[in-house]
Every structure is written in structure tokens, then in C-alpha cells.
Amino acid sequence: MDSNPCSSGILKRNPNNINNIEIELIYLIAKYLSVGPCKKSFEVLRAEIEENRILPRRIDWHGNEHEITFNDYDAQNGHIAHDYLLQVVSRLEPTIQKLWPTFPEQKWGLLGRGSQSLLRSEKV
Image (cartoon, rainbow, N blue to C red; front, side, top):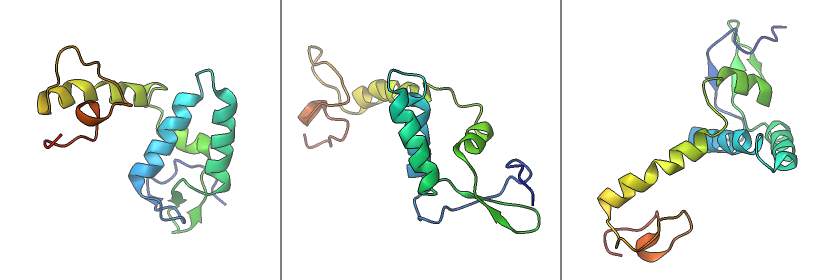
């Protein structure tokens, strides 16, 4: 049995039918937690990711499916920094401000509501 997670670049959708964006978000949250003050939370999340088979399966060149571990998936995504999610979120603010400017005295944050919400529409 082939145990090399990188022997094939083909990944199949996970058995739980979680879409790719959700898989990537869960992975990025875990990666972020792995270096911060919540390392126990990271360990629990990593265990749940594997236990619930959230990651996509790998298909080898014989067409056989193989589960991949968090570490396998992390190795495949070695280009992703631990603070990648933080960088993505930090880049949202200028874009949001261009789309829906707020008053200068309003502080931007992830937890805002109304005109300060990231989910606001033009009507707000």
C-alpha cells in the first residue's frame, strides 16, 4: 500500500461533503491556533479533523483512495504561513472601505455591526 501522500496530486472530495472553502477555512484556523496561545485547542481541532475525516482523500495512481492526515495535508500546503488567515482578514479592511466607506472616527473590526459590519450591504 502506498503511504506517500504526495505520490499523486489528485485529491477527492471528503466523505462528509464539506465544500473546499470550508475545508480550507478549518485548516487555516487550525494552522493559526497551532502557534498561538491556544495550542490545546489546536490539538483538539486537529484530532477532530482527522476523526471526522474532514480532509479530502488522496487517490493513488491505481485509483485507490487513501485517508490523509492533518500532517500530510499540512505538508502539501507548506507554502501557507501560520498567520495566513490573519493576513487574509487584514487585507479585507481596505477593500471594504473602498466599497462602503465609513466615517473616519469609526474603527474597523471583525465584530462590527450595521455600517461597521463586514457583511453589510449598500443599504446599511
